[in-house]
Image (cartoon, rainbow, N blue to C red; front, top):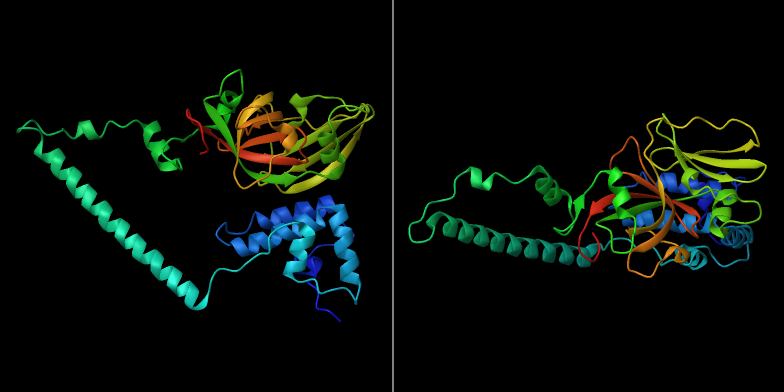
Length: 328
């Protein structure tokens, strides 16, 4: 009998749960893994791609239950998921040589940096023809925003902004001054994600400003409004699905936080950071994406919640100021 990889057992999942719920649980596990642990994260991503998709899950379940099926190893799982095979970091001599080379390069860079600092210091202290040396205040007048940008930018051009700066990511004819860097996507339950991806029609009310709501306990919800029922999925601040609930027509919805930030809908400047954006959201310009809703988090100034046209996921991002083309 082949030794299959049982994803349900490995990740402690209930086989009776629907694909959307399994995807949400795997997303929750993924969010607890150190970003440097690429092997574990890739394995969870593969499991999520399989168990979170009804067709792929059916194919996997059939092979798992078939004693005559080819072994479900990591290569077979990657084939079902449509993803690359997860690989472990290099070990043995290859790993040792790679580590040694990295240390040598780091040492060379360090020496060059030290030489540059000494040269700059010597020029600054010598002045021009015996001129005055800079005062201490001349080198200490860097603004707090400049210090923040230097400490928190990835390429020296991007400055981290509060989530309320999301309004400046809205595309109004020319490239906005800010962009939303999306770094996490959370699968929506099928009854919500499929309807959002399909767009308006069949009784769906297009109330984009209310798609994402936030509450006083810091949770957020994503809602679909039909003629007779409202379906809502509630998420914790880390993107973990709490519950999916239906509200009958006329039933009172949970009261939103009275200090929630204002959302907007329309084209926004968006950068993907390790996530997949729906093709249906793309505009004519680079980084131009159509957002059903962009809502700044009322409690975490580094978080923005986003829904994109054609997407089945809830996206989480951060706002940066970037005046030039390119990514942050």
